[in-house]
Image (cartoon, rainbow over all chains, first blue to last red; front, side):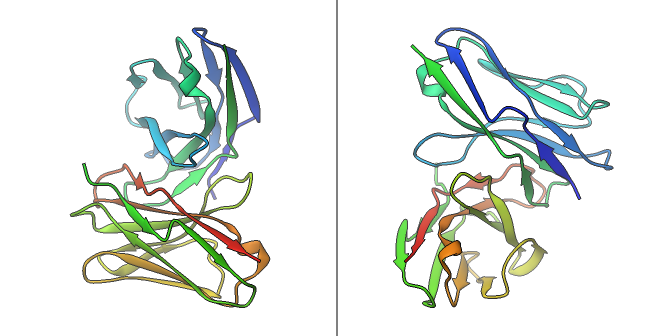
Length: 114
Length: 112
């Protein structure tokens, strides 16, 4: 079974600084999808960024970027120019194929300090 | 743009009662997923449906059942509720062939 690990239960960052959240996963598949979801206090699950395993280029969405290391099974999220609104629980998620369910990591709670 | 709709948003039930949660996917989405997120936990996959047929099954208790209807909305039926069933229940939808799932706002179930 696939597993997703987030080794940092909590992280904090100063406003306008950069922070990196770690995620590792275990799979025997060669084709899969990886995601970062943000869950603010409203509890709504919001997609931050996604990466297809067959793509070597790291995904980027504005201030959010990933460092995808397929051989190491690592998928870290970098948030640049952190803003107060970035404070949330961040979940790393794995999906084996397009029609399969997500497997989520335990989450990292990010605090942004003014 | 239309999003996934879940109802009710909040539900309070007593032990041993029954609850029904509803999910209305984004128009034209044919796949629905149910997840359970306990307090301080990550979301756990329960069950999914594609074109009204169960497509995958996760850690869904036998006391729970679900189905997808002809209009693609889905209902999660929960019987003999236990205190441990108190959680946030998410529904997500996708269009088969699309790897992105869109999450609803969740239904917060409290069992007393």
